[in-house]
Length: 137
Image 1: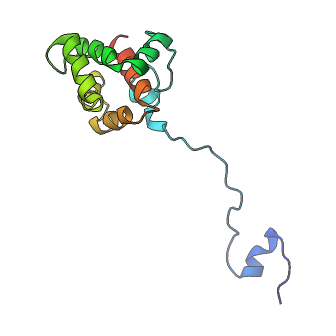
Image 2 (image 1 turned 90 degrees about the vertical axis):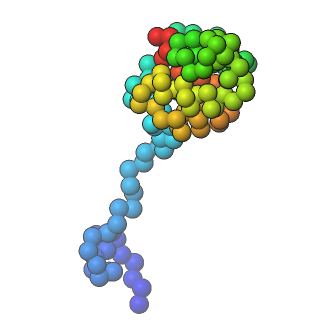
């Protein structure tokens, strides 16, 4: 009662229209698609060796992010106190500081995205470096 059939015989064998697309085109997932250069940032999220700053900026953001938040605060003025105020704010709550600073640096950025990008350990230093490069371009 079951007969083997080919895809050409699909409508006759099953009694419906055309066969489903059994081999959809393969496209790798784009996890951070909205975080790439298209959001009006001067560099992408994972371009950690880009200028200005280069690899040294990424290492500074990784080892001592309060220095980078202080430098960003000098230009964007999120909290009073210049570099010291920004460094203290970044030390106390870096994601909260970035949620306010990043939208001021780039008006297309949302505070929620800035907060979560700063919270995730694998994107925090990258995001901090990207905002710093954009502010000091």
